[in-house]
Image (cartoon, rainbow, N blue to C red; front, side, top):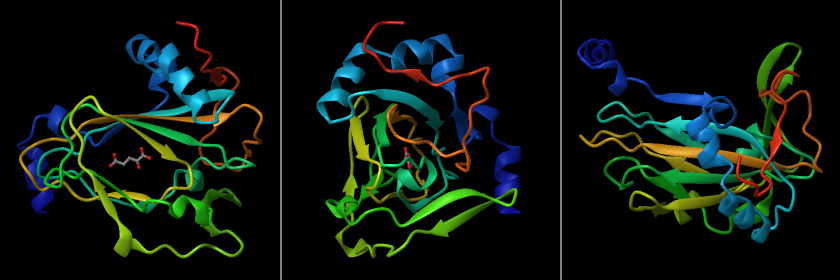
Length: 206
Ligand SMILES: O=C(O)CCC(=O)C(=O)O
């Protein structure tokens, strides 16, 4: 009820939570930014030699109503065999403890992936993987960063962000790349139709 009242008096630009998931292939401004050569070089230096740009999102964390993003691993949602997803998280504004910066569990990506979010009998379900790792969130570390910072997230790194109860927004742009050589199952929730094939992050300016 309170949320509904707040939203009624709020401009739409301050109410939207997220825009996704193919800005990088559908909008020329995001396309130019996302396929920039320096990102291809960085991905390669970090071990992703043949990146395909799978997903993009604008995440708004609006003042006062920006919701929590619960602990998760990107590989749960963007599952590949072998695990290959790499997240590029760009701070479009300062991210602080007050406005809901990212939190991570340093080193705990080495424990592997806990679950898969997937299609089962026409429904989306979170399915536990064999021997799911246990995470120690008492080791959580906040990533307070100024606008313009790029945070690179390993696909198995648990991360989270708190609600934004402050008066300042916390806008971010994220991109997720996977290896062209890895298998991307048809049971993953995010699927591209033939009209919009995945494109490589080659380093050539689009
Ligand atoms: O920006 C956030 O709060 C969460 C982002 C995230 O989980 C991601 O980019 O994988």
